Every structure is written in C-alpha cells, then in structure tokens.
Length: 296
Image (cartoon, rainbow, N blue to C red; front, side, top):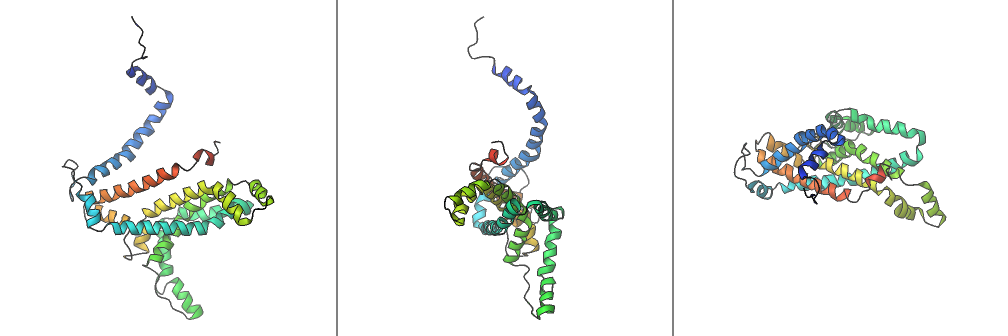
C-alpha cells in the first residue's frame, strides 16, 4: 500500500487532539462559557434583527431597530454615556494617581491598611452606598443641614443633577482605577528615576519620559475598566440623577421591561457591546500583559 504523503487522516488528528488531557480538562469550562456567556450574546444579536415589539426569533430579519436608534434619538443617550464615562476616567486619573503613587512608593507598611480601607466599601451593596450620598446631597440633608447649623448658610439640593451622577461614578469605580495604577507605578524602577536625575533631568522630565511610559499599562487598564463600567452604569444615574439625564443603560432596561420591546433593547445592547469590545481590542494590542503579570 502506498504511503499517504499528506499524513494521517484529518479525523484521526482531531480525535487525538480531543483526547489530550488539557483539552479534556478545559472542556467543562468551555461548554459553560459557550452556554452561559456566548449563548445569551448570540440570542441578543439575533433579537436585534427581529421586527420591533416581537418575542420570536424566527421572523424575517430587518434593520428597522438600527434605524430607530437615529430616528428615535437614542444617540443622545449614547452621547451622555460616553461623555460621563470620559469625565469619570479623567477625574479618577487626577484623584487616584497621587494615592497610587503613595501606595506604591511612599506609604510602606501603611499601604496594606490603605488598600483595605479603599477595598472595604466593595463589600457593601452599591445601592446602599449611593443612597448614603442621597442623604448627604438632599435638601435639608446632612450637607445642607450642617452648613445651616455651622455657618447659617443654605444651599439648593445637589441631588438629581449631572454633577451628582459624576460624583457617584467616581465614588463607585475609584478602586477599579486605583489598583491598576498601583500595579503600573510599582513597575517603575527607582534606579531609572535616579539615573535620569543624575543625568540632569527635571522632575517633570522624569515624570514624562520615565515614569509615565513605564506606568502606562496600569493607566490604560484602569482607564479601560472604569470607562466600560461607567458606560454601562445604571444605579448612579437613577439614584443620584433622577431624570437629569438618561444614560444608555436606562434605555436598555426600559426597552426590556416597561416597553416590552426586546428587539429595541437588543440593538442598543449590541451597539454598546460592539463599542466596548472594539475599545478592549484596541487597548489590549498596546498592553503587554505578560510583562504586567511578571512572565518576562
């Protein structure tokens, strides 16, 4: 019998691959991800092409839902979500960078205590923490009442405003920016900064040419996390903002619940997921994860 130059049959090689220990061990997790993660996403994508206000996935596909994003002015909700997420990332960078620098370089043994104090609120429900801010910002609340007693001043209610929403976003997502920044700044060797200083570099030049580029992976990861989480936030705008602005997560919830328009909610979700996925893909191409986790 002549030898087969192409090697063993394809089915045989596939069977050998499936019998490898690593594949068998990963199979349950793979199936779980396909059913629990990829499956719902596929259903949402299919529903986005179904006619409005229908509950069946077996109808003629249409682009009417995508067109309605423009005709029904849903782009306004996208604009507010992008704008507030961008402002949140900028404010968190300003707030968290000095704290992260202290935790990575200055606090020493106190860094663990600071970490615990910052992470502790994560054990409390987000809604409970936000309602605490309601009591502070409400008219005749803690802030207004304290000013009246101490200074005799009264301020209007700060609740149900855009700044209140931004405050809630910054407060809730601060740890998601802070801890990646700490990791990024920890990757900056002090010897390099000393060498730059010995060569005559100013503090600003050291920050711009040495510290910032080496800490950039942590900055990008923190910015990406907080931007995506802020983009899909819901509780902050509803509890602290009321009807001041409508973010895209509010429209998605309304479409799936009160309006009972699953295709509309699906198309808004698909557009939000597509934008977030493109952002993650773009940033991950510029982040060396192996260097961050210490593989090289």
